[in-house]
Image 1 (tube, rainbow, N blue to C red):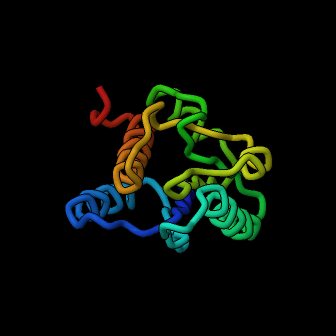
Image 2 (image 1 turned 90 degrees about the vertical axis):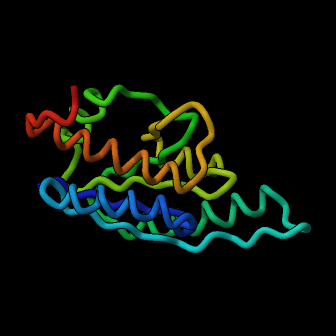
Image 3 (image 1 turned 135 degrees about the vertical axis):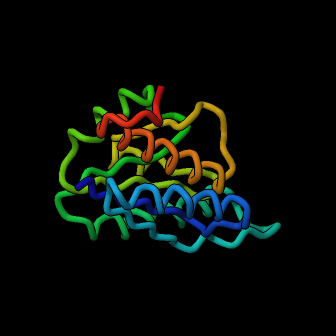
Length: 155
């Protein structure tokens, strides 16, 4: 069974999207062991400097990701490589026993984290609101699983 962890900076904020995410989590139970980890976002204030926020969140994320042994880590980043759903499905099922995907904070990842984890995947070249990014990822994960299982969800 596929083992996936999704690590997010910040929690879901929109209840409607939370319900949709819960639906995909329920569907995915048949195909994957999925865990979601939410790390706290750095508080934004008028005096906060964007680079300090990115560095703080990237450092916290790096520290957390370092706890996973023998796992493939993928940063979900607008600058990453794009794949079709079928390409993503094939790639995902060729990975190690455990694949960790990370969604950064409001300002993304710093260059240090990008160099440390060169596997980067773009859900879109457009910037996505964090709740939408999580929903889109969960839907694509479900789609990848159904493609591998030969189900008719993907046409």
